[in-house]
Length: 166
Image 1 (tube, rainbow, N blue to C red):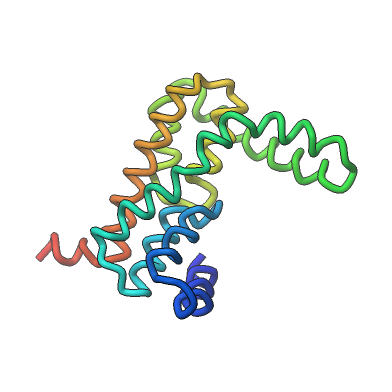
Image 2 (cartoon, rainbow, N blue to C red):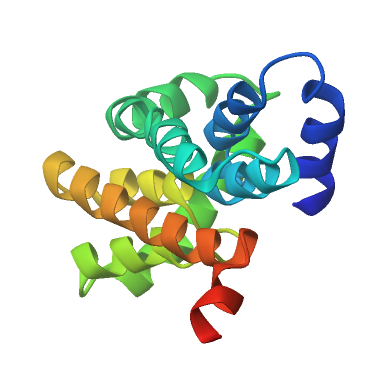
């Protein structure tokens, strides 16, 4: 992820405002608010400016994913070129749903909020959709997860941990 974030900082940092770069990075799957905060740190964007930008950028695609991903997948499965990718994404999502099935709200919140590879709002939305989770419940869990991930990554990206421990 660091290589991709560095690429955005190097290639877009001089072309558009640093805040716009942070927003764009936060929109991307895999990068999300984690990458947004890393690029904000690289571009010297103030933490208190970066946090709301990252949260909005990360959350913006979530309702659309929850509402439309099944229809998009059904459409893409009709084509030989995209069917294997869609089926792989569905398998990946279904593998993760088993772990969340019992405590779905808290499980989804923690899945989105703990910044590990393969977790985040995009994947959490896919899982919630595949599980048939209630839209409102999923939105709240994912939003709280994004807030948790933002808090954790703020501590990591901006060195707040060192300031807190001192």
